[in-house]
Image 1 (cartoon, rainbow, N blue to C red):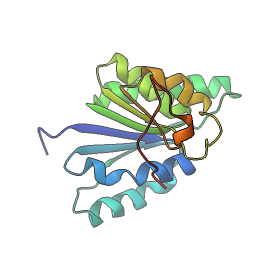
Image 2 (cartoon, rainbow, N blue to C red):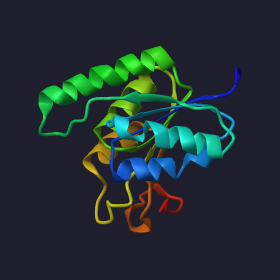
Image 3 (spheres, one colour):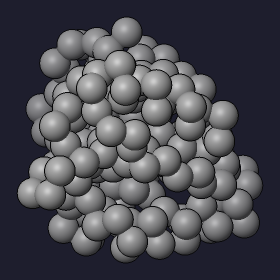
Length: 160
């Protein structure tokens, strides 16, 4: 697949991850790698790629953290930066949370095109990570029309 865009699809485990996987057809024909906070999905991702006629993608496990776990957040940030330096993706797609924030933040600095899609669970207000990462992302989307604003996020539909 040389010459194909390199895509890093990154999200924390749980609902963010489920929504990210629903976007997988968007990167058919790309060289894709996944990064998440759980090793549990490696086989599922390989089966998903095989069912679409794609080679097994890269799969990377990062430290799980949230805003109350400052040292884990620091570790996660370093892991994301090192992964980006190693993979050098052309495009980063994320549905959140903190792991996606760091990917958008560092990826933008490294010249990657970035997309933040805020979780559908955030119906009343944007997620904390989304509110911080969105303005830096090249494309910032919400899944709720009520949350769309001039300047972002934009509403283009729902994943679920």
